[in-house]
Image (cartoon, rainbow, N blue to C red; front, side, top):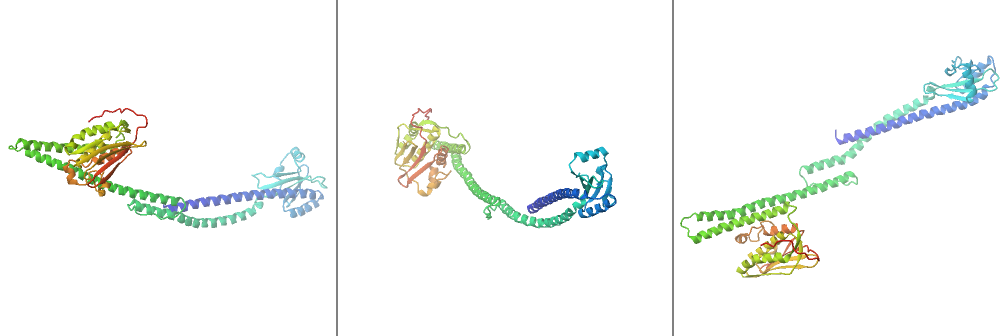
Length: 477
């Protein structure tokens, strides 16, 4: 059963139950009102008859006069003496009232103790009875009983029931038509929304639901549009991730294959029996260099993998940048000197809150790159505390980087000059590692470069504050 049928059935049941219950309550109320009105009328007529029947003559004329009164009042009437014996009745031949099957003393108690008028209207009786005494009667009559059939009283109710039943049938027919129309009106946007959602579920995330409504259905359509937009965005993101992953594995394969080929070629040459010692040592150095290159590659990959998945990738503490910079400068002072490059560093104390090993690795990568691409001039490592943050920079006077490469400079395996970068032994992951470490520190790496004049890489760290602390770290080379 579809939603339209369910809505139509639900509305029909609700309306039919409501109309039927209302009609039943109306009939019950009308019956109660008519019965109450009939009792009140009978008691009022009884007062009138109390004063009329006191003047009835005795003897044969008693029956004739009673029939005249009964014809006017339209009630069944019975006159009784003080012993409860029936004297006259209308219509003639009326049986004794069933409520007068009493002993004489009970009858006297009824006449003496009860009010002048007493009504008997019991649920099991088919008639209503009204007793009334006759004071100072000119005949033997001491009290009378008038009664009326409840069926006669409720006869108008039968007509009302017929009218209500006819109206109920008409109402039900109208309800069926109205329910079908309302169900169609209510289900139409839901059915349209269902078709639109199925279309989105089948992959058409570009589809937009147009439904200008101010109710819950309009809100739902807006939510579905947002969901479709999110799915579309996630799908595009996954596509890009898939492309990057494919490129990543291709780059890894390429990066590993080249040094392996060099290693294999060097090993083949080492097997040559007439190879002199100088060439032998040359090939051994080639094997060692390429093996170290593969080692650095996997070390960088492990660093990036930890950045992606390890919540404890960085462990911050209060450290002095002077010690870290001093370590890095000692490592690269000799290689820089061999290239004719002067390595200049700041030496003043500057406390920051960061992971010492990771920041040392950042400086290591930046200075290493600067030496690779600087053939003369200077490389400087500087840091400045402005109170809110500490700026750390590595500046060189090397070949520089064209601005077109800046947006992708920190992508994994991206090289501005692939051939020259591999010749210099790089893994293509150094700047990616730098960016990952700084991201974990809630910071980022920035670049400024001028082709032919050099580059400047800089980032920001959180200062320790005004209170100086001695670094609880071991400065290792």
